[in-house]
Length: 229
Picture (tube, rainbow, N blue to C red):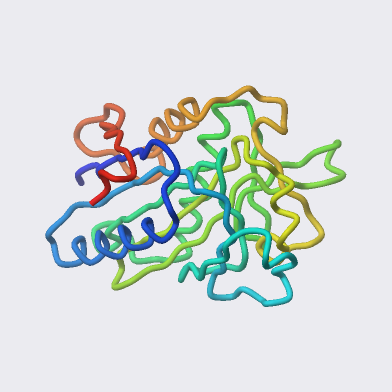
């Protein structure tokens, strides 16, 4: 198994541009014209609606742009200070099991956050990654998962809160869950940089998704939004 291309975009990537890029790359992967891609981005502030989004969960529709994402899940927020990780992987070459793929995305996130001594966990019936706080009296979401699979090629992926403006979540019911809050690495008191987080993701990817013959960290290509194919 060869390692996916690993790409980090500098600056804020418009969401519509990201959707177009993913659609194109997924089609090329399916046709055998391109390899897998892990793409790390930040977006301008917006709300995205998954295929299960409920209109009542969009509390402030005029606050930010709202986009239909085409992924699974409900409403979520994207914005500066949040690392969005788009995973365009060929599950025909890996494992054709959607539940396991979501589990692996969660596991990857948990292992990356463990590099900063964050005990992140799954919760039954709630997709995503959670952090217990106040001695277990409350739980906040630190990472969201939302995927789409087309002919066993994946796209969309996960988002991890590093230092977004958490007040921006007030415009939605995040992922349809009103009884829990959201948090970030900086909100937890951890002075983590985006580069730190990117390195943790790169270092733990092979642990979950399998290492190719070369066990070194993935080669990273930094690009500006205008350089995206």
